Length: 191
Image (cartoon, rainbow, N blue to C red; front, side, top):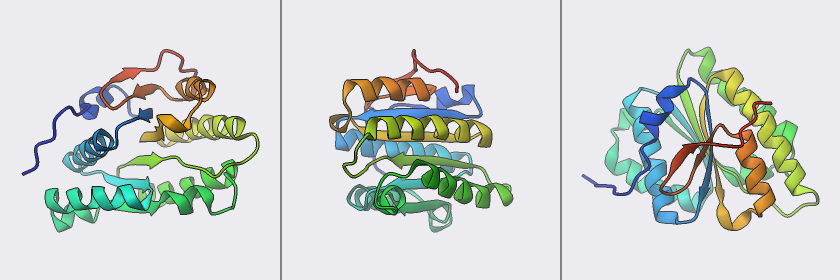
């Protein structure tokens, strides 16, 4: 059995709302992985499906932990999608197509009456006006998460975000999470 220390206890806090849109600003890869696994574990305890949109390097590490912690039956409820393909399949970060694709994936679970939670590590290629594009994306994602009643983590590496983008992310996510903290976002404005 693996003992994980210094985890953010997501599941106790998230009982407050059916729909929880969480901005996770991470710095430490090991704590990030610990929190990802804690999120998966919380989902397994509630018989949720988990859609994990992650880069292949991080997911390989997570998959090793998942293999040792969960049964074959439980692992059938974990669905992985490479974030490079998800966010960059159109060449640029194309907000509306990404949201449309996300909605299609979520509908397949909802049609089966399954509960689902999502974890997405958001990464992008360099492009003009990316701050405005990411803000628009997260505003639309917030509406989508609330409409579907999802629990959804949007993870961003802190070294990739300027201060203005961090502020915008706190406006479009009801909760703010770091590697060691979890609070209601003081800037959240439901669009």
